[in-house]
Length: 132
Image 1 (tube, one colour):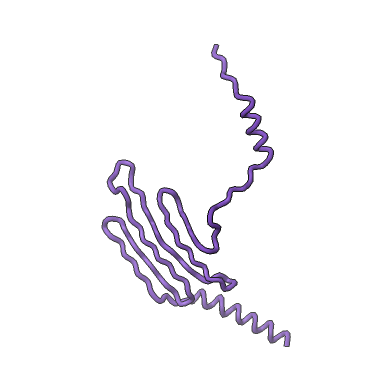
Image 2: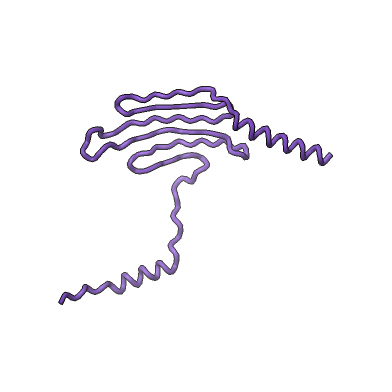
């Protein structure tokens, strides 16, 4: 009986891996325009999908061109949890949002040694260099 359970588990895992590797693409669209804007999307049989669109901002400006990208992707995590991420990427960086992500990043606490060093620097300002 134990051998049957182990064999069944092995086959289930092997089938799951095989199904992801051989997932059929159900739809795929892509469009690139002369102005540099684009959009693309795809969906696979195993529930993975993504879509994205981007556009150049300030085309022809002396500072160069910045790109603004919006999109989303979704998949099922190994534990069966559906994961969906929506994002914007622009001059402020990649900004993902999803239920599985923290709302706002919390910086780590400043180590005590660093706090002491900063306090020392604050209370002991550097003297100006003497010129000869």
